[in-house]
Image (cartoon, rainbow, N blue to C red; front, side, top):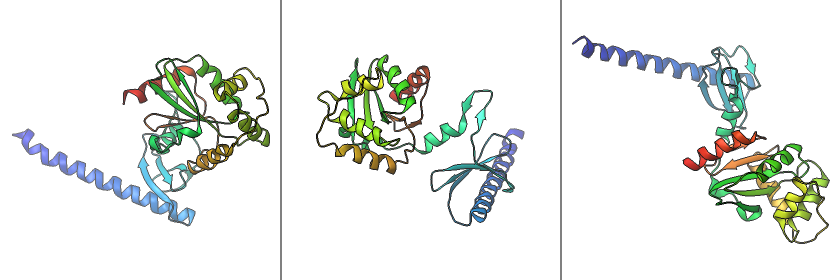
Length: 239
C-alpha cells in the first residue's frame, strides 16, 4: 500500500524537477541572447560538469555558461576520467549529416578488402594530418574510402588537387603523394570538381582537414589514431 501511495509523490517530484529544468534552460537561453544581442541560441542543455550548461548557437558553435549566465566559456571540456574531448564529440554529433547527400562521384574511390565499412574524408594534399591519416588508411583493410580533394591551405594545394584528379589513376596519384611524397605529375582535364568540392565543403562548415564522415552520417573533425578510427568505423557499421 505504501508503495502505491508513493508513486504519485514520485511522479509529482519528477514533473516539478522537469519544470524547473525547463525554466532554467529558458532563463539561460534568454541570458545568452541578451548578452549576444541577438536571438541566436538553438538549444540549451545542462551538462554533468560543474553546473555548466551547453549552449548551441545557430551558427553551429557551442559555448558553456552557468545558470545565471555569469560567465561564458568558449572552449572544450575534457573528461579527465574518461580522457575524452566531450566538446569535440558533441560538435561532431551536432554536425552529423545525411550520408545520402554526399556527391560521392566527386571523390576518389578506393575499395580495400571486402569494402563493407565506409569512410568519407575531405582532405587538403598539403595537410600534415592528412598525410598521417593516409599512412594509417594504407594499412587498413575491409573498407571503402571516398576522398574528396579539398584544397583550402594554399594555391599549391589547388594545383596538386587538380593534377591528382586529372591523373590516369587518381587513387594511385593520391597515395603516391599523400603516403610516399611523390609529387603528382602535371595533368590537364576538366577539374572543376575541385571547386565544387570546396563549395560543398563550405556548406557543411568544413574549416579544417581531415574532416571525415562515417556511413551513419556522423562527423569526425580531425585526425584520430588508428585504433579509435577502427572503433568508430565498427560502431557505424553496426548501426
